[in-house]
Image (cartoon, rainbow, N blue to C red; front, side, top):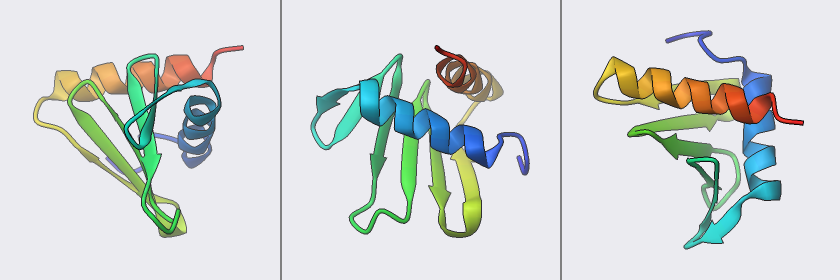
Length: 85
């Protein structure tokens, strides 16, 4: 999984969701992806399609999912959000 997603893309998608998303509970939802951070703001989370992406300190990330198709769907959503105008 290392280097599958550009760190800058993760941050850009997170910011776009925070700016354009709809607040529900303690997270923002946009285009099928949920974005939120932990209390100190050092770790951000993106969730969708049965996948959780955890992006933390030192620009490291981890993807949790059960099936490869879930990951593929999630990465497509991130790509689409990142490439919106």
